[in-house]
Amino acid sequence: MPEPTVAPEPSPYLGRIVAVGTQHGKQHQFAPPFHRVLGAELVTPAVDTDQFGTFTGELARTGPPADAARAKARLAMSVTGLPYGLASEASYGPLPGGWLGHEEILLFCDDVAGIEIVEGHRTNSVPAVAQTVSGFDEVAESLLEGLPGQALIVRPRGADGAITKGITGGDALRSAITAAISASLDGVALVEPDLRAHHNPSRRLILTSLAETVAHRLATPCPSCSAPGYGRVDAEPGLPCRVCGTPTPLRHREIHACAVCEHRESRPVRAAADPADCPACNP
Image 1: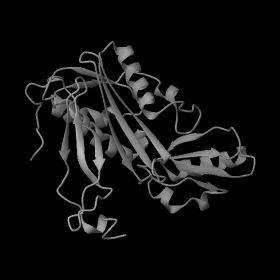
Image 2 (image 1 turned 90 degrees about the vertical axis):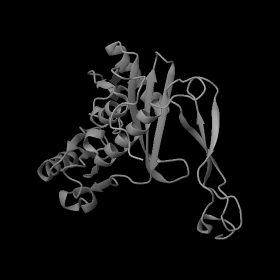
Image 3 (image 1 turned 60 degrees about the horizontal axis):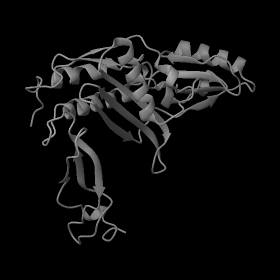
Image 4 (image 1 turned 90 degrees about the horizontal axis):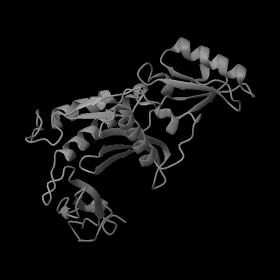
């Protein structure tokens, strides 16, 4: 079924203005779905979201990702005086399950309806892997091939020298590496992908997808109390194998719930799992 091209009628957010807590251009990913699905507009005040943590470690994030996203949204709401806020937070590194990857969450606050909606996305895909170099010629092709879209960061290893961010060209990269090597304690520079959204194309795709999910969820009223934001909040594993009936790790049912009242329902995901995913058929 094609997605709606105009706001549903009646959209609870038609004509509403949502404050976005970002200083890295994320409003460009959020605005199209929120306008098309909800009829809402976004405003992005000048705020310092780096105070809640930076990828490069100048300021460490002190709490869970949801806390940081909430703080960003609340800061934007406070500055603008608006009752609606939106912000995201990303984590790169070890994720639950032990694998390396990227987790992104998008959080929406509505002080009028008294709701908070959180959606997340996990992937084991990362822009590139950080590398130590003692000269420009040692930079891996995996880091260079992303330029200029996927920017790079350079810092001296083992020293508190300046970090150069947002590097999008070879000449700037060479200069930054030379400066970092001079400032380091052992003649080595660390080159890594710039993970901020405005320099990270793969992250922007995920932010667009999450904004779409959140917008459609906000357009969905609770079947019991009609509050906005009804949608999936959890999932149950155990989808049975279609050959032997053994429960598998795959999702069996999804739990949909209201953000205001206690209404919940369990929905089947699909009928059965393929034997390839079955611990009995494919041990």
